[in-house]
Image 1: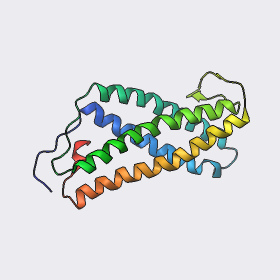
Image 2: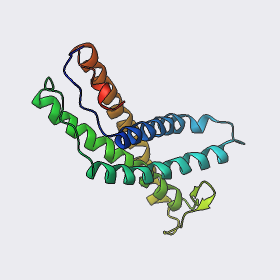
Image 3: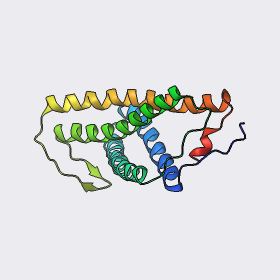
Length: 175
């Protein structure tokens, strides 16, 4: 591995990265398999999925505030300007996904007439039931999930590329 010192993100950013990342991956996996779960378990699983989705949305607000108030370490010198550019786009898309998913899920649920519970606390039903609009948010939610999974995969693969091909363990920045 390249012996140059790797500059780390601050502790709170590293923690938020991993907590939100794990929740997002669990949510995406759960979302893809929820419909295949035994019918008697679906209400509990859907409720947990919605609670974690709201939690992710709240954590993302904290995460962005943290990012805005933190010093972001400059990329390793071996990272090309093209890779820096695509990295910025990737980060933007990751954050966008972390917001679009919970917002579209919440709006889909309430437009279908289902109350969203945040670990037992009911969130407001701010709209009237409308299955047509709910269907639009359902498509946004499911399409974003697929795109989000692709972006996360690219995020992961680019890290692996830097470690194995470039011989720069950029993972040290966030661990």
